[in-house]
Length: 227
Image (cartoon, rainbow, N blue to C red; front, side):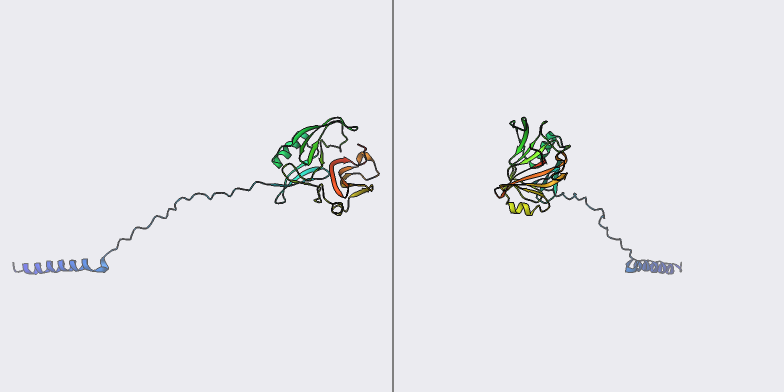
């Protein structure tokens, strides 16, 4: 029984050491704070910028086709004269955004009645009895400076009906010119043949200069035919 106080002392010391250990900061294990989720929130795709619609700025008539150019200078459509007339009319309607007016040309000393579609100063003409260039199915005839929708109609050098004789000739230095005094015949885009050669193979785009101004132009034309 004399050993009991010693045992109690050991137990008391052990309890004290335990308490001190529990209070030691070095023995405390900290719990890490929760981290935010790294999952990205879904985002909406960017709204695409709409492409502006092409706006026709000019129609060009050369020796083998009719072309529509937009306001940025890019080609919108090229309609070869070998195109079926109904298709050609539909294509130009679409490019200009306005339908041509369908009429019938009266018979003349050279031709029977012929159908045509007209957009202001520009017409497409076709028929079975007119002398056209090989492979051509319609003729482009220009009697005014603009289409119905106000689009300029020009020759490749930029002149239109009403442009001066000086500007038209200066813009076509390599063209064949027949000067008849009162009027000038300008072969501005020859596609085949030479003047004075075989009339059956001499054709292309033709312009009439009268009274000092560009009066009209057409394509394709056999230059040396009477009609």
